[in-house]
Structures are given as structure tokens and as C-alpha cells.
Length: 51
Image 1 (cartoon, rainbow, N blue to C red):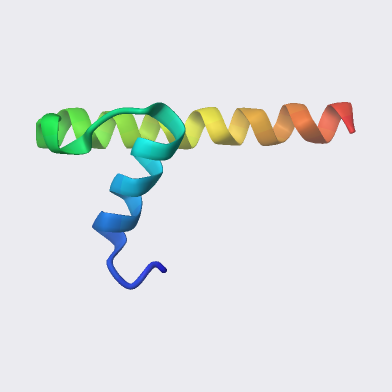
Image 2 (spheres, helix red, strand yellow):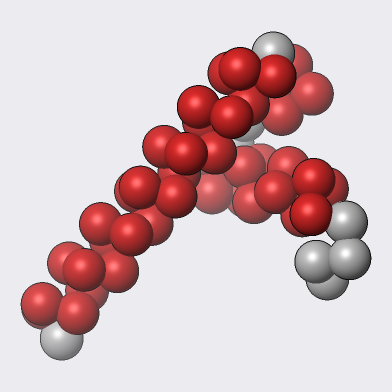
């Protein structure tokens, strides 16, 4: 699955955020991926605290 990290990350952006990574500039892509990583981390903490 992660043989091609960029394609894998693009798929993650599409799946979780519904954005088309092909329409993002490189900077927007990087910022969006960082924001998604932060969101997922916060969700994991919330789920751990509530479970």
C-alpha cells in the first residue's frame, strides 16, 4: 500500500478531507497534509479519553 508514499498521501487527503490534491499547490498540499495529521492525532486522543 505505501509503496508510493505520495500517492498514498494523496489518497488519504481525498478520503478524509474530500480534497483533490492535484488542485493544490505544493505548499497547500503540505499544509493540508500537516493539518490532517493534526486532526487525526487530536481525534485519537479524544477517542482514547472517551473510551
